[in-house]
Amino acid sequence: MSKYRIASKTFGMGLTCNNESGFILGITVLFMAVLMILGSSAVVMTRAGIKVSDNYKNSEMAFFAAQGGTEHAREVLREMNAISTDPSSFSDELVALSGSNGLLDGYVSGTDDVPIISASLDDSSYTVYLTNDVVDGFLNSVDSNNTVALTSVATGPNGSAAVIRTTISTFGLFPLPATITLLGNSASFTGGNSNAKELHGDDQCGSDPPKPVVAVSHALDLGPLQTSINGSKPATYHTLDEWGFDVNAITHPNLISTSIPTSTFIYIKYNYGIDLLDHHDLNNLVASLQKVATTIAPGGSSAATVNVGSPGEPKVVVVTGDFNLNGDGAGILAVTGQLTFNGNVNYDGLILVIGAGFMQRNGAGNGTLSGGIVVANTAGPDGLPGNPDDALGPPTFDTSGGGNGNVNYCSTIINNMVGSLPLRVVAFRHLI
Image: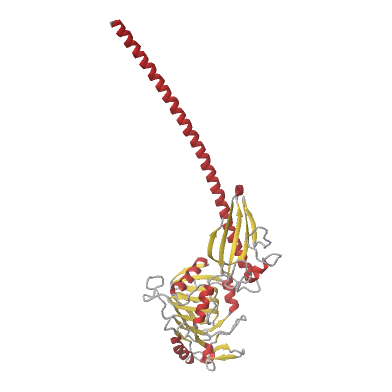
């Protein structure tokens, strides 16, 4: 009996050991199979990730090529517009690129529109078409708002593609209401007592319609303005009447100085996107100039240390504070503090004194400012633009120094200076 039990026990132990070995082998095989599946999945996922990464990289290359095409076309269009018969709009360019059928087709299959530019960049290429903007209608060849659209079609590696549409406009300069425009209530104007000076609202270097010499934004300031002009040698202020005859502030005070009509503010806001009675818009104009400025100078600097350009090489200069214009220059000058100049300064271009809104001439001399001037006090009670208390306040223009101190409206100079600025981006849309 004991032998049987021993044998049985021995047999039972052997059976148990054999079963455990098989179980472990099965688990091992199963574990290896799982590892193989996981490894295969990892390989598949890695390959898929690499493919997705490659596709993304290719798409990005196509997208950046499309962006590069837009920037290329933007500069080409600026150059075309600058030498066109009508730089004030893009109608000439829209017609010229409309193709043999004389119609703007835009970016569609079979279009015969002439691309404004086509080029290749390594593994990418782009073609850019010009159409009108959504306001005028994409296929309309008449530009009424200085705004058009560039559609850049690009291809990248392995058949990747991108299409972007960028709405662009001329730089947001508005037509000047007068040779000297004063924006803000309680405007102060001092014209000087020299018989030698001349201030002209009639265009001295172009064919624009004659303008007033001085315009104010608030009607209540017109009376004090005309009184000041009448006491500062009124015969030295000139413009043309409706028949083209020279007139002055003695014979035609309302042609020499005026308050800006509401209709003008509405027209400029609608067509040029700037509210001349809004300090935010005026400050944004200066900020936009900063982005394209040749030089950004600190307050307290002067033309002795800052290159303010020349007629042959105009500069865009933005001064963040007070500035002394004690030398000749040309281009666009924006000053957020007080602008002081003397009588010997000759400057061709646009002068914007927006911020502290104070422009003053000191001393005698025989200088001439040719172009146009805008003075706006947007600094608010603390006198410092860019703070929360900013508001439109009283602007000041004081040219009480002796000498001739000429100030002339000159449309060709202004158009040339503004035409040298990059076209600005209004809107951007990624189509593909």
